[in-house]
Image 1 (cartoon, rainbow, N blue to C red):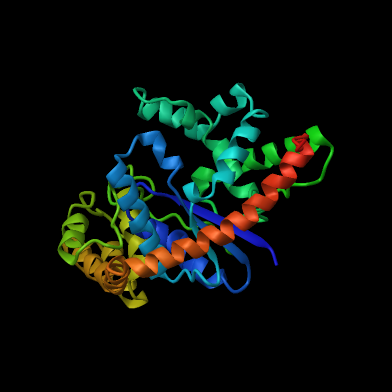
Image 2: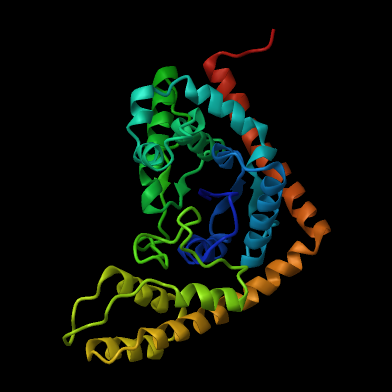
Length: 329
């Protein structure tokens, strides 16, 4: 059975982009693959979270994964920092990663531009830690969004370089996994780009109905179509994409017809979209809150995940150390 691995940074709650872009598919594939899901708390340290926030965020993401349907018995759900073997493999891989190639990565260049006051070594070597996350479990497939495809290619480069340097065929070349279809890009409410935590344009699974209504009603629109079947601007196309995800086909068809005949009222569309999002997220929010109130269940799930993840990771690290030449006296 092939191994699939996916992680999410512990910088806050899951939003609709996380859920529809990946998590719903994770639930479906648990029976067909050997799945590892982790909360990437080490990655989040590049933004210096406060200790209390870091722990609370990890706990929240765990609860959301569990509420969404990840089964800790069937899959391996763990916290990144609970597996110290990842950090050691990260160090070993850093010895074979070069400054030039790391500085050329798109994600690093984006961070330099958007947060010039905090360009730390963790950001530079982010692809190396990501590679360690993946190959520590000898993963065959990795679900990634478009923005992370280059980092996955870096993982393949580091794995291939290790094999070449030591004359082995040890690490697999992990492939991007898109669940047999194009990667879903869930747009944000700001009229451009995908939904994301750092962009502040998201709707979260734990958002209360009134918060969802306020967010959706503030979504960016335009002045409206001036001729029939007019091409949509990006903000309006984004709203329709969200509606395609959460609304019925009849609802979507109704508002598309309204748009194409220049009769659309964006306020009415956004009210309907908000209610449809609430319909989808309410059962999830209730389940998340139920799990957050059950400390014993969270502890049990984390302990089980830690045990399974460390068993896999320690085997890989032991073999890697032997390949490199680290041997006991």
